[in-house]
Image (cartoon, rainbow, N blue to C red; front, side):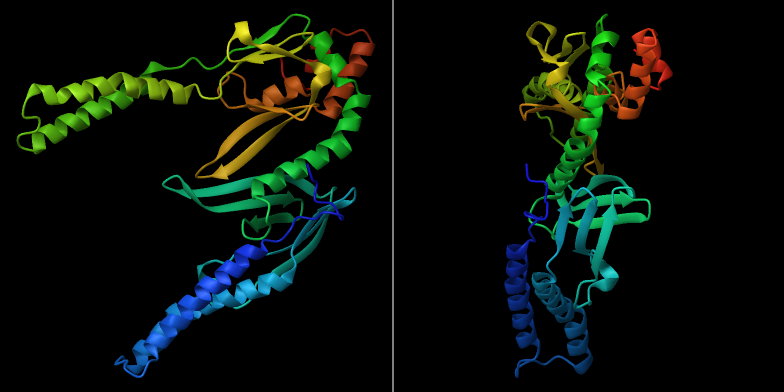
Length: 353
């Protein structure tokens, strides 16, 4: 995976700007020619309103995209911090702005406080995606029209850079994997949430009540009893769909001395050795399509994703599978003093079994 370093920074989205220039420029030119044509009978104020509130914003879009082509945004990661150049998002009151407000900043890792993505959707269709870089001095919100890689791709690259350059060497020094081996000599089974039938029955009840209301309001519906047969056939389909959605992403999860046991069922689960786990981290996406996932990255480059369908929170699972460096160091020091591994882990601030 590319880390967007000096030799290969995040590329700007040039093709997107060119398409917008051609599209909105052609539309604005056509509308202006229609309004200002010799056969037009509009009054003076109608022409002013049309040019100001319709043609004006279209030309502003063209001007901003021309500016974006030569603004040269970049995002570079280094051992000292993040070099960032981007522009602020356009809101309603800035639709008539003919240029972007460029932000140039250097973010040292000492000020870095995390990154997350934001997705806003309308009827399940995303219409806005942002990358939010949080620092001790404030937040930087980068829209999805700035760089060619997606905001999720940039977030993953930033988190990978931090893990491989800073946390992984420190993690190996404190022997966190050896701590997990000793702590889970007695296996710990992480139980998934029990699938509830209440939600499926409520959904089914709402469908039946809706059908009864329609039958009462619409004369002649249903005309005969056989018209309810398709509805009755849909009942098991509705219940099965709800149960599948409520159990989506749930896997058997068990922590043993030899490693992490994960799979669809206990009989088919596989054992992943502690030394094969590179790191575990939380992916957070806020907005109308928000989600929280736990990614377990393996040393062979593959990854496992766990969703929020367990009795333990994903933050607790992350610290159980991949203890933070400072807590692991404290717990390992206590183990070396003769403390029980579980008692040492709890004393260091790690979650209980």
